[in-house]
Image (cartoon, rainbow over all chains, first blue to last red; front, top):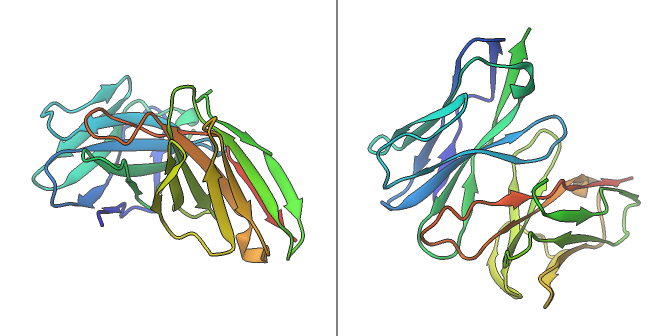
Length: 115
Length: 116
């Protein structure tokens, strides 16, 4: 089975600064999707951004962007101009493009935003 | 609002009891997933259904069972409850079985189960 690793259990960032959360994954497949989900204190899981492996261009959603390095099997999330509302647990997830739609989640990174 | 509805939001019960958690997927979604999240832990995949059929099973205990009904709603049954079953139980849905297309998961707000 594929594995997703988030090596930073906790991170902190000053408000308005930039922070990068790391994610690596292990797969033998070439076609897959990667996701970052945010879980704020409300505990709701919210999709932040997605990346398709066959697309070279890094995905961007407003202040959130990814650095997708396919050869290195790395998928980091960059949050620019951090806001207090960005404080949350962030989960990286992998899904194969083959049928079945199995998702593999990392263990999460808890982000604290310091005012 | 993700469009996924879970009930109840909170549930407190005693050890040895049985509870049922309910999930209505987003309109049009055929796949339903159940996840368990214990305090300050990651997501444990329990089980996946697609259009009424079980598709994948994760770390689901034998005391737990689930099903997906013809109207696509799903129920997770937890029996002979133990203290360690206290957790947040998430339901998520997706359009189909993935393949091409993002097929991301849309999560409900979760059902928080406390076993005393």
